[in-house]
Length: 479
Image (cartoon, helix red, strand yellow):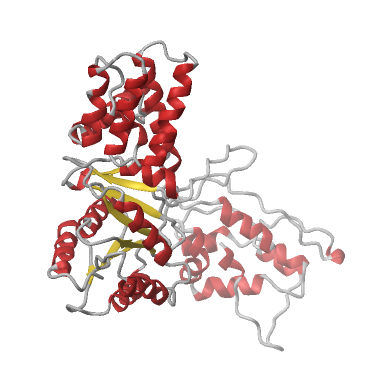
């Protein structure tokens, strides 16, 4: 419709002017004009009395379609009827008999001189589907929703399965049962387990038997003396009514020694990668512990890498690579007798480039009495700190549970060389004495992260003081 007002600009001097009388005689059906002197052209265009057929051009291409439909004669008549310099004559309507054959529609009477605003309103009023523009007489159509990406679904928390107190209690009971099954054959468990059944009376002989069992199990003379003397004072004060009460008091004292060091290992997510350096003497199970830790971290959906830093022992690199292949973990390794600090440096560079979350570096086993070998551990720490000033974030020392009091000397020397931050006590199953755990906790107060109670990967357990003591002492004499 807007194209009705498009016309060719008349050339200067070629315009032909008509008087009002001539135009009135030519178009007898034109409505009377307003005051010519005011140049008023605000004659409002009436909307069509009936909808335009669906063959009418679409609103977005009204101008092009109408321009193509008008022939030259209709365009000439329109340009002659509308003059820009004569406002009164601009409101003369286009004869229906001229516009109807051109657009191939029924004659619809409408004025020709529509203002631009009115024409645009008319275009909006006529839709391609024949519906009129919503106004006072027609309800507004609901707005169509804008296409957008689907909103993330919010989980229905009512369907989530939370662990009930009964399930938690059952899991704890199963955990204690596993510890008791694996540690039931240890020297400390056998000594203390049968102690109360042999001599259940409350007297000094019972306390002497407890003292002997604790010293034999490598708890340590100092720790054992303090523990037994405390029980003797309480027994003299008549705090124990029977042997069962003494048993519960002994269990409580042992748990109190271990509880301060029962701190699980926490991986710092801000450290990329979190460098874990394993140290220890020969044959304590460092490489096997690394393989079990790799399995645990993979189950926690963590990305990790292993560094085969034990370049001295034969087949140590191949053993770690076998653990890496089993768990799907990349292993950085060099040749036999390579510099362990160089292996750790290359592994840290690779882990940083890949964005790995955890890097576990193996080291060769060494005797704590060899000062030259202990100095090499300090070199590894200094070299990797060139890439990361905070590395290693965890120095994990692996201690054999069958070592006895010699474990105290080992930890003392390793701690002076590389500042040990966590312990792993292995080989607690079988005939291990197990009392060294109490001695380590009392003297060094270094967190015990894990305990090895079997050969399977899942047998590397987070240290649980209650479960550990429960495996050594029954809860009651009837157990």
